[in-house]
Length: 382
Ligand SMILES: [Mn+2]
Image 1 (cartoon, rainbow, N blue to C red):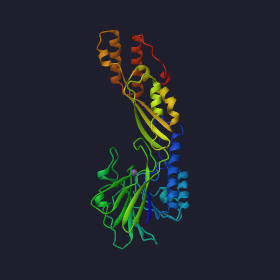
Image 2 (cartoon, rainbow, N blue to C red):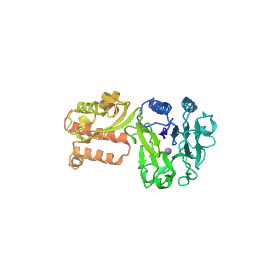
Image 3 (cartoon, rainbow, N blue to C red):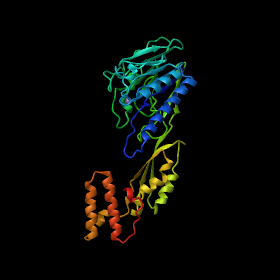
Image 4 (cartoon, helix red, strand yellow):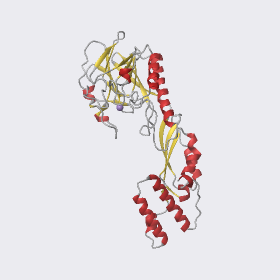
């Protein structure tokens, strides 16, 4: 018995964020479709006996008619593979949801209620149990209430929710449950959705319990390769293989610029960053360390020099000045007064662009006091 398990594709997700270039969101949304299509093709060719989608396939608040037509076509292209969808908090089964109002190909089985229902496949002895979110939050949790009969069939289940012990930091608790209650006797495999990493949940039970994670990254919260799962069940033995699926990877890097005397060294360091996945990267590069003011002002020039190597580059300059500004502020000189005033304004501001402007003003003013030349590279956008 072969299963493909995915979840949390979040088709039509919003990728708006400060500094994102025009077209970024459209390219990311296309990437989600491309990844989903590759999963469909794998399920069709392998072939899988069933494709399990454990919720958040699309985002109902934003899903377009075009995306629904795309999904209908993709499912139709694998008419020989039964598809089981357990709607989640972003794609709940409501009366006005596309799941309810649209015509879906015959091989697509969508769970409709917040209670366990089962589909028995005529051939192959597979029984798929599932449930649906009936709103952005589920009205009642069916976890713990699944009854698996001893009928010699292979029983698997699919659903969306938060396993309490594995809740990632900062993630909202939707439909919380404990794996011990969900992994009932006789259930071979439990396909979960909601958490965006591949997670195997172990405990005092026989069921193989897995989150497939999202098959494509959505943010810097999920760096590195993403996956879907290929599951094989043979004589009660379950083996699970995470299949790499990302088209574009989010990556995060830190470059320590301490001792750099020129921005060229930062450019070289960024050019030499490893590309562990051999894929286009949406990279966050954070410059750290203590640096000269001339270097610290060069971040937009650095961005311009290297950004074409990335699908998108989020360059963060967190370098600290080599000067000791607190000591300077204590000097009883006009320079001391100047630095003290800017230090105070920096402490008072919460606005990031104003903070950069004030830091730059402090660097420029200090250079002027010292008769030191200051390169104006990058000033135009600081
Ligand atoms: Mn979710």
